[in-house]
Image (cartoon, rainbow, N blue to C red; front, top):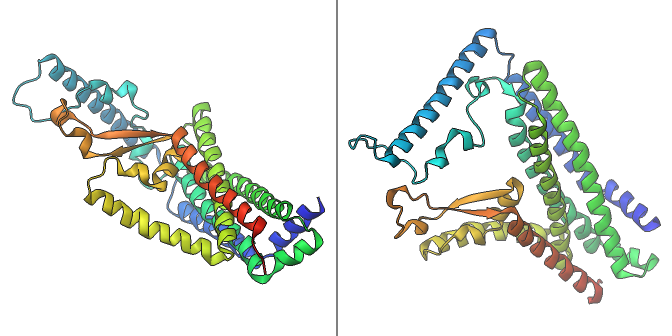
Length: 337
């Protein structure tokens, strides 16, 4: 307990951590102020017009679905040049995740139910970067300055010390992420109530938002552990930053380009960013034109494939767990001076 308390004091006293917390609060304040300034309470006329446009859009979707069924039954005029999917259920309004609603036709009006999810994605992205940088600087600075050596003189158990550092980091980041999430979403909920529209806040909305939030928190913890592990392996904060930059440039950009040149099938499966998106969204669809080559569906082939959240999570856990295990193994046997 004394070791954890000491690590918590060391982490909270770091100027870089304090600076990142200030930047986090500043980013939230700017986002909230911008949203407040760009929104207004809709008038009765605006609401009436938006409802009419939403109803017309839904009628258009139903008409398109009926035309697809007519083509499938052979009753659609032959001179039509509109393309429909091979399976008309794909455009069936009843099967759609979301139908047009009045909020879609209210420009300049913030609707909490419609914007909460994109805003939460922004929060998660910021917290992922926050966790990675704090995790890397926390252990990297101690290894560079010799603070770890001094700590081992007091508690000469390497694995215990490193595990306490990692546990303290993850616990602190989790608490900060939870507090930031509550404050962030509550702020925009108030904006929706006072300077916009709350939207439809039913049980399904909160369950969906809670699922995204839970997956996002796990992603933040994995990012923090990853930054910690890479900095431990490289014995410096810059090692984690360099590894992140090198991966983004060499593989996410360069590797993707090479895979496209050699015409590799399903190149998105080899990108960590694809698995991050699949995990955060509960699944993701990617396009590959090779899937339509020689397909019997002809022009109606969509060429999409899906990555579910289970393999995406396994990939992220394997990467983070492997690097963390390697960091502990190297820390156990190498010279720290």
